[in-house]
Image 1: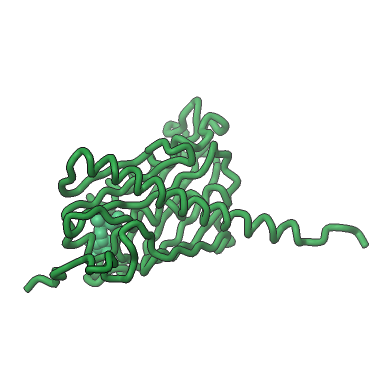
Image 2: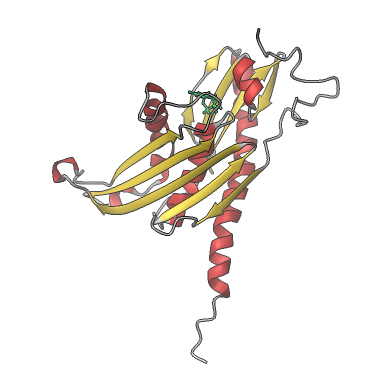
Length: 246
Ligand code: CDP
């Protein structure tokens, strides 16, 4: 028997979790949570819990893998075995390899890669609890972790998904909307609105697709504010430290 809800949006225009169609789930981030990593970020977004860690830039071994004119960025998206209802088999899967590739490509355009030829930056995104939208959650956390590591970037990248349920576009899908909806379009974009990731599962019309981009832009704008606020929180704390001699 399917658990598909009869309706996703009620007569007041509210979704099953009480959100409006253009509202993102509550998000909070904490920066610098891992002392061994050069940069780190813990993110909670709805019921998603993701930890991102950045190591580097550091010299890449073996040397034959080094790029002469830029840093090599490696990104590993991983779901913990206990992060979903059915246990996830540990180790890379087709899904995690694909997500790792597209996520790396989502933030690579903002990293000033030419500054560290021969070096590597390793980004790890560990999903501790999954509830739809984990690839976008991981990108949001990874980007803050990169900034925390002091990696020079042109700006931040934020990510969010738009989907379609009951014939309407909705921002930031929850689990039932992701499972039983008609479309799921995760996107990532820079602060200038340059799109660095688009994937699409399901069907939307060209008009709906254009509207989905606009909705996603607004979602990403809100997420970027939270990312910036998270970064500011660290640097404000640093300013508070009294470094005078007396
Ligand atoms: O998480 P995201 O939306 O980026 O990726 P997805 O492949 O569309 O997966 C949607 C959701 O399905 C995940 O967030 C998990 O909650 C769940 N999932 C799962 O239960 N088992 C898997 N092997 C993969 C995903």
